[in-house]
Length: 299
Image 1 (cartoon, rainbow, N blue to C red):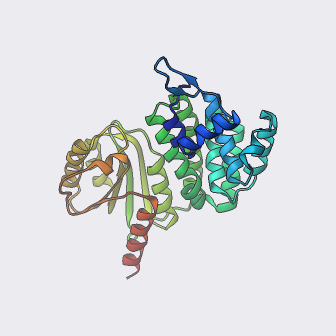
Image 2 (cartoon, one colour):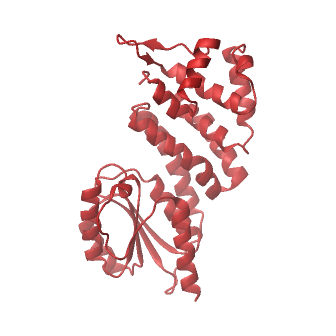
Image 3 (cartoon, rainbow, N blue to C red):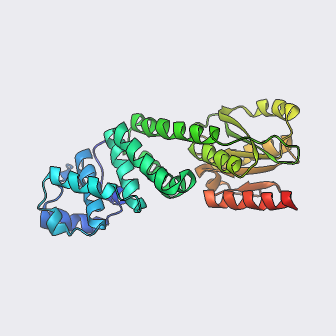
């Protein structure tokens, strides 16, 4: 950590590399270190400062004015703009800063304001999901530590369980049942939890089996409960080729059920998929499928 290239800084802040260089040269806003081969690198404090500057600049403050502000004045201005929950970009940046600092109070505040303003589902769609896209990018580039990733995942995971538990379950024969699980070795359940929430909110029966479930354990569930749909996700532990093998094994066990597959791993799948497998790229796609299933049930 603490040695970002200018391209990583561009990806994490959304500010173009050439703009960063201009701000650095003309205003001295950030001060990179240089490697033995004269490559710019930026530390955690420079990333933090750039994220704050991006919030102020996006809200209309000129760079020439920001350059004259002290660190305390920048922090005060950022706090002011963070209270404007209509700007989802501000909220994403604020969550990122709170994650970097591991500031639980500020993280909870930003999250709570977004949920109160938009409602849980919209807050996840427009603030939390984009935030986790950024977290994924930071994870890939080594810009955050496992501790920071677990810190935010733990908070948001708790919010999901509370939101899911607050929904009234349905137990009727004609209401389709969805089963949610992660394949063995998979532990990133944020997306799966959200999909479970979306299904339960729309009146479907749900069973959440959680992380790292051996495929051999699933037939026992099918013996105990009627299953209509299975929803799974792959982020890191299964590459595209192995995931396709896993999908084929799953559909051989559940030939009558539709299987939804999401996550970064699903985007790597090549080859012919079994007929009843649906790849899901975004929450909106899953919502569209849920609505279509709901219409079928009504008819």
